[in-house]
Image 1 (cartoon, helix red, strand yellow):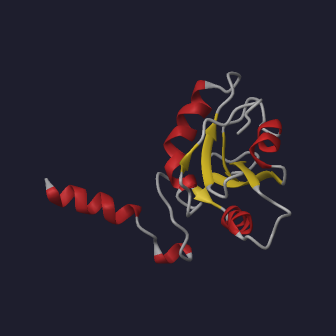
Image 2 (cartoon, helix red, strand yellow):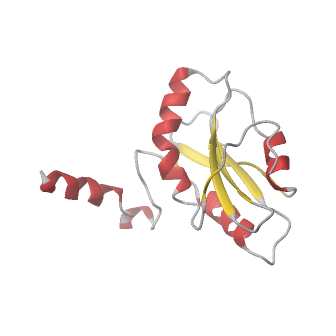
Length: 141
């Protein structure tokens, strides 16, 4: 029924009680993720052009920046962790912005499943993305 769809859409919108943080599927993206992403998108700040976001140690819902740097997607690929699902984004050589979701083969099925449910909630914080890239170790543009 259309009533159900309206309710679902309503729950995914920004909850004013969360201080304007977009929430969905129970994931809590900490402010530093958006702050770092805004720096990546800032043409005047060349000190950072990629970020990797992952779960705060011991948390199943809180997402923070686990790595960031310059050097483009290839440098980002070198920093990918093993065994932990991560989300992130890069400024590409052509000036476009891409997001990604990466899970290594050593990541448990439980973590993979939870992270895949959180993926949209995390990537939605990174506004202005043109799409997604298949980020993995060894990735080059």
